[in-house]
Image 1 (tube, rainbow, N blue to C red):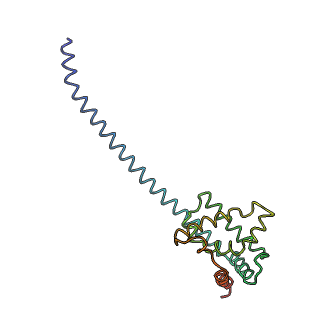
Image 2 (image 1 turned 90 degrees about the vertical axis):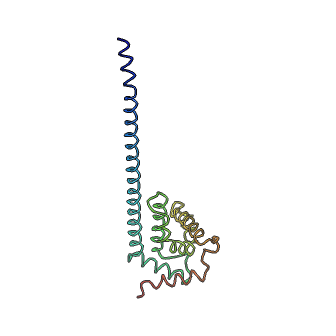
Length: 191
């Protein structure tokens, strides 16, 4: 009787190897399919994320170019051109509040750095430089106000320096460049 069990076990051993091999192949194909599905899902999520970030930046751009902030920008530009950037109109606060919100959203990962740079860097650069004394004076009285603005400025300035392959000093506009830029801002509502 033992002989028959022994013979049966010898005959079934190759069958078990074949079954184990088939099971391993099925498991491997299942893992490959799951990996492919995960990659495709990741790509879809990345596309959705980019789509949402583009939507957010377009809405922010729309807000920045809406009549209220356009008027504030024109008043701020005229203030700069008439040489009183230390005592700007109260609407300048709205501009820096907007920049502060951008900074917070960028720090929290809600905005894409490249899109923020592309849409807003020119304004951030010129307003922060032109009204730096005003911002510093406000921060002396309220240290928390606009704290994101300087970090936003520095971060986007670094992007510009890398992109242009220039040092910070070469990217910062001088007085003549600021004046020309603010002349264009002051004329926004003239047409």
